[in-house]
View 1 (cartoon, rainbow, N blue to C red):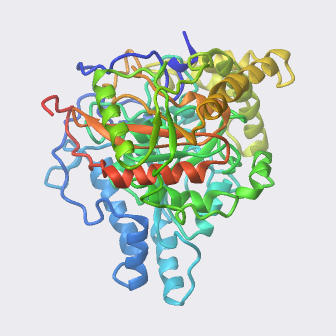
View 2: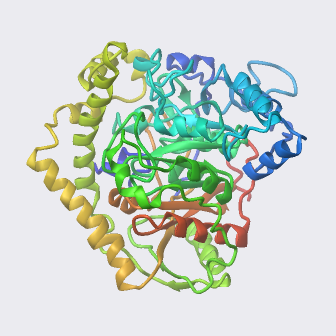
View 3: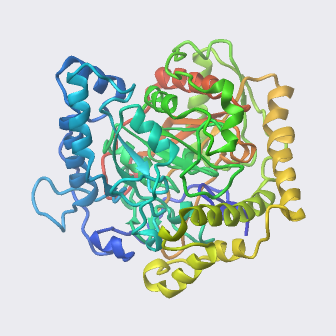
Length: 558
C-alpha cells in the first residue's frame, strides 16, 4: 500500500467514481464521534446577504460606515447555525439547513472582539488590513482563548494552549475576528491507512456543499467547505501533502500552499518539519493573497522562517494583473497525475483559456520523478511526525491531556468506540516504532525525497523547458463519502511541491456533474508571488467559480 493511499490527497490513480455509496449525515451526535446516519437532508437554504462577499468589498463597506464588524460577524454566526449545524431533522421551517458540519467550534468571544474593532474604527484606529473581517481557522492551530485546539481528537477535546500559534497572533494583529475553528480529518489525516477524509472523533463527518453525499477532501476539509458555503470571509488551512489544495479544488475555491518557511508553523500541531505549512483558503485569488500577506514573516519560534527573511512583508495583492499570463512559458505536467476523460476535457478547456490569455504552453512537460516519491516521503513523515508531535506535547507540559504519541495510542485503544468506530490508527503505530531523526534510514529517505522532488523533479522541468511555472490538474472531483471503505481519491498533483517544500496555488478550472475541479500552478521556492499572479490572471479570464447548491447528491444530468 502506497503512502498516497492514506495522506491528505492520496492515492491510487484512476477515474472518478460517480456511483452511490454509504452516506453519512452528521448531527450533534458527532461530538461523541458517532455520526447520525438517519438524519434527513434539507433543501437549499435562503439567499445570504453576504454570499460571495470579498475581503476588499467588506472592508470598503466598513470604511464607508454601511457595515459594522459586529453585524457582519453576527450574520456569519447565524449562517453557521443555519447551514452548518442545523438540519431538517433538528428544526422545522424555512431556516433548516444542510448541516455541513464544517465548523467544529465557534468563538464565544467573536462578537465582543468585533464590537471592540468597531469602536477602534470609530475612534480612527485600524489595526491592520483585515480589520473587522471574520476568519475561520483549522482546529490544529493553537489559540490561547476560550476555544480548544484538538486536531479533531477527543484526547485533546479539553485542551486550551497557553499561547497563540503565530498564525493566530498575526491574524489578530491584522484586525481579523477569529470566528471559530473548522473540522478536519483527525490528526490531519495521519492516523489511519483506511481513513475517511473530513471525519474526526470530536467533530464527526464534514460534507461537501456541492453534493452533500460527497467528500470534502482532507485534511483541511472544514476550511474548504466553510469557505465554499460562505460561512466566513476566508479561512486558514494547513498542508503536509494536499491538505490545502485538495479541499480547495474539490470545494471550488482558491488555496495557496506557500513555500515552506514563508508562514510560521509555531503552535500548529505538526506532522512534518520539512513539509508542513499553513496557508489561506478563499473564494478569490485576491482574498487568498490578502490573507497570505498578513501571515508571513520571520518567527523565532520556527527556524524554517529564517530563510524567508527577504520575502517577508510582501503585499501579494499589489502584483495582481489580469495580463500576467501574456508571454509566460508554462509547463504542462500530465504523467502520473491520474484523472479521467471528464477531467481531461475540463483540463483541455483550462489550457485553451491559458493560451487565449497569452500563455505559451510547453506540453507535455512532465516531471521525470513523478510517481517515485511516495515511499521515501512516507518514511520521512513517519519519523518527523513522532518527533514533532512528542515535542509539541512535551512543550505543553503538565497542562496537556496527553504527553506523547504512545499516550495517544493508548487513549485511542481505551476509547475505541468513539475514536475508532470506522478506522484504526495504523499510522500512529508505525510512527511510534521509528527512532530519532539522527537515524540513517530517516536521513537517507529525506535526501532521496528532496532529490526526487527538487533536482530530478520541479527544478529539472523548470530548467529543461525554460518555464516559469508548471501547471497540472489539482485532483479529480469529489467521491462519495464512505466510512466503511474509506477514501477513493481520483488522482492528484500535490506531492512534488509538497515534498520539495515549494509553493502551489490551486484555482477553480471547471465542473464535472456540478462537482468542482481545480488547476494547480507550482514552481520553485519563493515564487509564491509569481504563482499568485498567474492564478489571478487565469481566474479573471475564466471566472469559473459558482457557489454551491447543497444538493443531496451529484446531478448526473449536468
